Amino acid sequence: MESQWKKFIKTIPAAVSVNRWKQAGLSFLRYAAVFVLGIFSIYLIHYLTNDVRENRMAETKIETGIGDKSKITLPDGTVVWVNACSSVLYGDMSGADERSVYLKGEAYFEVKTDKKRPFLVRTKELTYHVTGTSFNVYSFENEEETSVALLEGGVTIEYADQSHVLCPGEMFIYNKATDRFTVKKADVNLLSSWREGEFVFDDMTFDELVNRLQRLYNVQFIFENQTIRKETFGGTLRDFDSLEMIMKVIKTSI
Image (cartoon, rainbow, N blue to C red; front, side, top):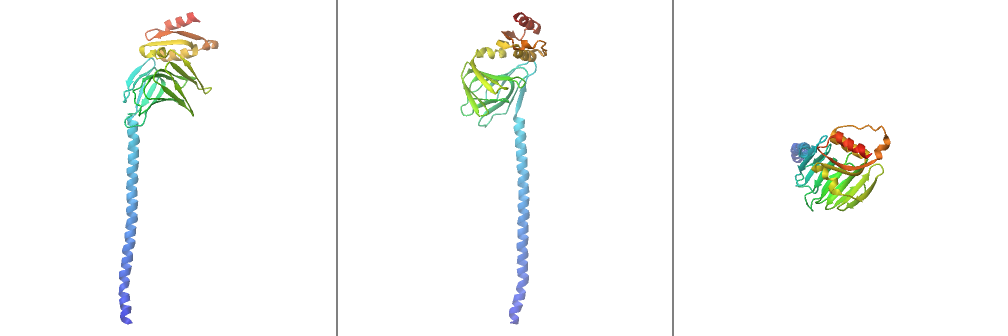
């Protein structure tokens, strides 16, 4: 009996030792897991931060001032004319499922055809969805109406849960106040002639005309007679025409 008891006593330190090793091993694994998780979190934050920074760095914004125009070629080969007091924001367009630009103001687009990657022009209210086409977008945030005139190809206008397909020679006009749109036939080539130094207007209210003149000549109009705002005019302005001459022409037509 005594010999068995001695043998049992001798085994106790070994068992305790093994237990301690197991506990130490588990503690080590726990610390290692926390360490690895921390390293992974730091790497993930670094990766996401760099990714956002690179995306921001890849964005390009083109802005024009009063009386200015600019012609640019986007990374996909699309050509854009940007009218006065307008801006176009775009990325590098590489490897994306779609090609997007953000427009404030007026611009004319000649979109490079790519049926696999649609081209989207986004404004505050509407999105214009195309694959390859030529069209003019007019979208100033301080004006009641925004519009698009289609010269060639096709454009799908998307807003809220609605959409409308535009045909060449048509003009889509959206009224922000009423949330309604109209489509009409128009001389779309004349509507985009501003990129060639001419501004042709037909049946345009004086209120609309004034907005354009303010962006071209850096002037501000004050209406003493409010009824004249809704009077309509037609004519052609050129880049070299003086404001004084334009006002004389308008005066004779009232």
